[in-house]
Image (cartoon, rainbow, N blue to C red; front, side):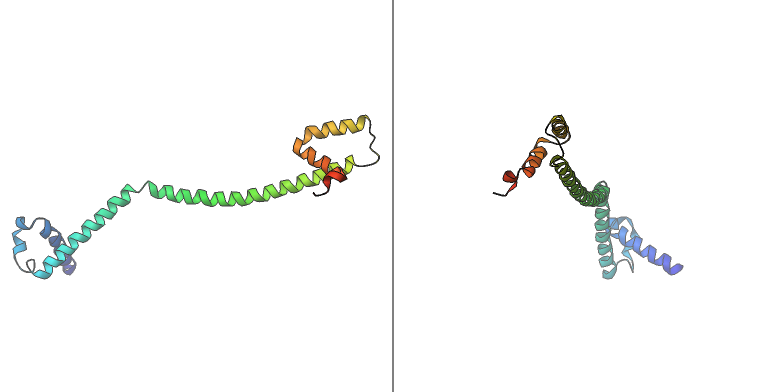
Length: 149
């Protein structure tokens, strides 16, 4: 225990020696006046100053650290959502294609009369799908327009 207290006393004396040499007469005597002790005192003072500076900088950047970690969490969620979004878009396109094929099949059946039912079907179809989709459907049923140019 005495060895530990001696070590603590020497370390404290080393720190105080560089800052307040003239106030402590004890520092004029051996082992405090040796070149080794002075080198150790200067090195420890520089080390303490460096550590204090790092602590000060880390405290200044403290709000940025949680922000960076939250940015990482949000970015990983965005990547996952982007993958899910692509899958949903593909499923949506597949379902639209299936619906268009089913509507095309129903509209092109020979049993459908050209009268009131045909007009009703086209009117209802125009309400359900966009003009671009309706034009695609019309071009799909027309053999002249559906051939690639």
